[in-house]
Every structure is written in C-alpha cells, then in structure tokens.
Amino acid sequence: MNSSLEQELAQLQGAYDIIYQYLVNYSFQLMGAILIFLAGLWLAKKVASMVAKQLEKHEIDITLSNFATNLIRILIVIMVAIVALSKLGISVTPMVAAIGAASLGAGLAIQGMLSNYAAGITIIVTRPFVVGNTISVRGVTGVVKDILLGMTILTNEEGEQISIPNKHIVGEILHNSFEFKLVESHFNIAYQEDAEAVVVLINDALCQSGRLSAEHPPQVGINGFNAIGIEIGIRYWLPTQSYFQDKYITHQAIHKALKAAAIKIPCPSREVHLISE
Image 1: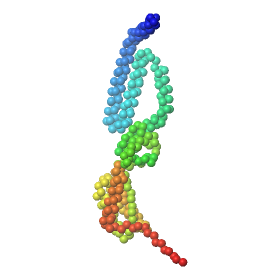
Image 2 (image 1 turned 90 degrees about the vertical axis):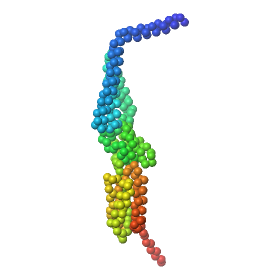
Image 3 (image 1 turned 30 degrees about the vertical axis):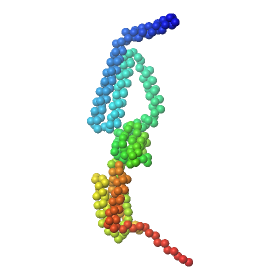
Image 4 (image 1 turned 180 degrees about the vertical axis):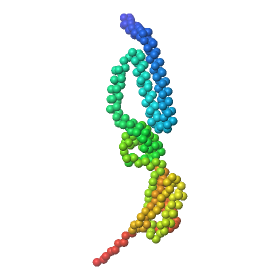
C-alpha cells in the first residue's frame, strides 16, 4: 500500500516538475500570448463597434448590419488566436488545415441553411420588400413582420405567423402590394338609369368611407355595355393589413347608397316558351 502511495506521489511530483519547468521556460511567451489575445478581443470589439456606427450612419438594414459586425468580430478573434498560439510556439499549420477540412464538411452538411443565409443577404441588399409590406409568394400572402438571414416572417389577417425560408423567395415571382392593395369590382345598372349620376354617387360613397388610400383616389366609370345593362367599373385602394374587412364595409356602403337612390340593378332573365303539340 505504501509503495502504491509513493508511486502516486512520484507521479504528482513529476507532473508538478513538468508544469513548473514549462512555466519557467515559457512564462513570458504565455503572458505575451494572453496579452495578445486580450488585446485582440478589445480590438475586435472596437472595430465591430466602428463598423456598426458607419452602417447605421448610411442607414444600412439592421439585419445586414448585425451580420457584418458579428462576422468582422469573429474573423479578428480567429486571426488573433492564431497569432497567440504561434507566440507559444504551437504550429498553426495543421490547425488551419483541420479548420479548412471541418469547414468544408460543415458546408456540405448545412448547404441548405447556407443557401437560406445567402438568399437572406440578397433580400436585405436588394430590398424587394421591407417590413410592413404585403407580399405574395408561392401562394402565400401576408404582411412582412421581420426579415431574418434564414427566413422571412409574415402575418396574415387570421393572426397566423408564416415563416418562409429565404431560398424559396429569391428567384420566385414576388407580388408586393406595399401598404395598399387594389380592389377591382364591377356591376350592371339598367339602361334607363343615369350612368353619370351613378358614377358620382359611388364616387361620393367611396370618398366618405374614410378607409381608402389618400394617395390613390378611387376610379369609377363605365366599364362596358352588355345584354344586361351598363357595366360600372370601380377601382380603389385599401390598407393591406385590413384588406378584407375594409372591402366588405366599403361594398356595403356602396350598396346602401345605390339602394337609397333607388338605382335599379338588373338581373339576367331567361324566357322559356313551351310548345304543346
């Protein structure tokens, strides 16, 4: 038992001697490496802060700004870590090769995620839409709530949150309604009615609704003629965030105005003649 205890003490003494000898021989290199690394962390923070201020000054998108500053900070820290390791006499060539191989493998494994990030950067730089716009892509429509590097988040009138990977947006046909969306409608009035008076009546009803876009005045006029009557066309713009609700209320106001003015809206009719033998 004493012999085993002596062996353990001898091993501890040997480890202590190795550590002590290493600190004696390389203490200055170790302190230099630590100072270099700490200075590098400070430098990375300062440079990232300066870049962030410049990007904010030029009104660069906040998502792209955060991505750029974080990337710069990481690159500076990696370079400083390599310098600190070389200060200790550690060869960084095998480490760099290992990092390169690991990066290649990781890139192949997460290429789908990387394609989303690349598409996200494209969206942020080209700005085909911004937060608050209403877009339709791949059969999905909603108001843009947030634009992330990996995905774009929409909300619809039902209150649902829709997350679309950015790679499914870039390269697709994109419809952007911005803040207002166009409503197109038409109906028929009898040929005996005064079409000009009906146009004025509908235009007044639209202007009094208070729900239409102030930038886009409504358009009302005769759209055509058919066997039923005179076709009246209506075009107006509503806020996209309350599109359907405002559309139904506006149509109700138009119907109320037509009914109050006793405007006759003809219905298609068909005469059937029975021939008895």
